[in-house]
Image (cartoon, rainbow, N blue to C red; front, side, top):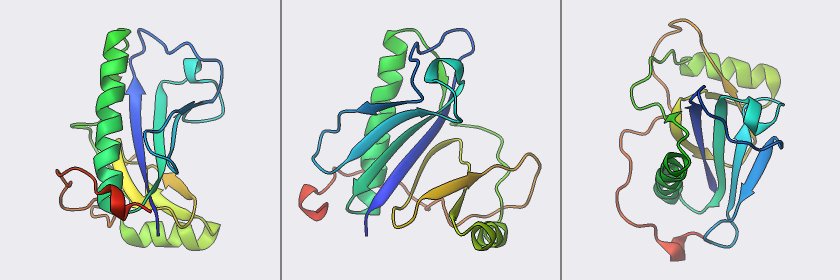
Length: 160
């Protein structure tokens, strides 16, 4: 089984990332990995204030967390260098859909349902996900947030 990461962040409304495409493929440091910056929605990156950094092809959940965190940090530095602010979800208000709601949405749609986490999340790559956002307090609890984030370097031999 392989794992993916998803980082949702909000770009500052004062500056944009001037890309006319909906997504930009970012060169990965390792063969077999896929890293993409994408607008959330159908429009171009320059018109979107909600953006996604997506990574796929990690051999373990731990590697996905580690590399996701490294790519998040690199993105923050790159945006700071061009003076584009971003909210990466360190302290957002959250309205998480409970597991029962995600299961029901998954059953109805046939697609993996994930909470639309503001910030970094990791999930198995066995099926393409769809994210669900709650605008109210739909309850609490989620199987999507592990209790810890690994802090050691990734094991390259375990990836493939």
